[in-house]
Length: 244
Image (tube, rainbow, N blue to C red):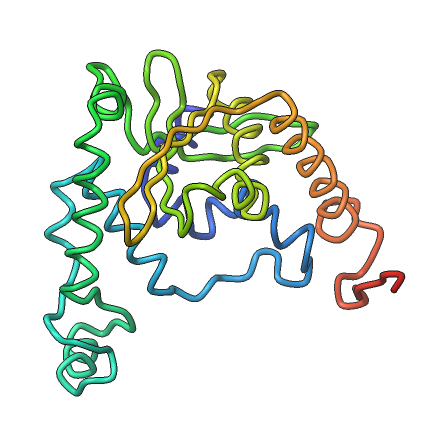
């Protein structure tokens, strides 16, 4: 059964679609902890999401880069851009200047020999799905890279010097904990700064992983309360309660 599930999760349409939604994932952490009423709802595609997909494809699956639409205009407000979106029935197309910036970020990572050797080590697996029972619930994850020693996750950041803080804000701590549980290897983040192309490598301390574990515990409590098979509360009655 696990092999059949992983085979289906290899497909993006199943991983992110109805089939994959039967499993919890790190992308659910933010919703469960901050806005449970948004849990399970489809997220609108954004420009950063498309840019991120191109960035990952360029590094890990370069044969897929040709699938990205690119428009050589200065702005998304131009008629040419809108006409191209309409012709291809899509809301977002990458701009040429964005692709140039993304290519420079990719080149910056590839230009660091330590990174290059780790990312393209013989035997590495890319975009590898996995599932595991964590605290009594089934979680899924898709590793950017599984190497002989690490699960390597590629990130872009607005400030490489503050990555340690944004890692907490964007739940990379819970991601590291979940991926460690699923794939059985320590997680290593490789990040590149937008605009400057500065790069960094970040391993995970026990404190970082413990913080991620605590987020997972709280998220499961919320999920069981509002969405689990034995849920005790109606999500439509959820509201924020704080002391000011």
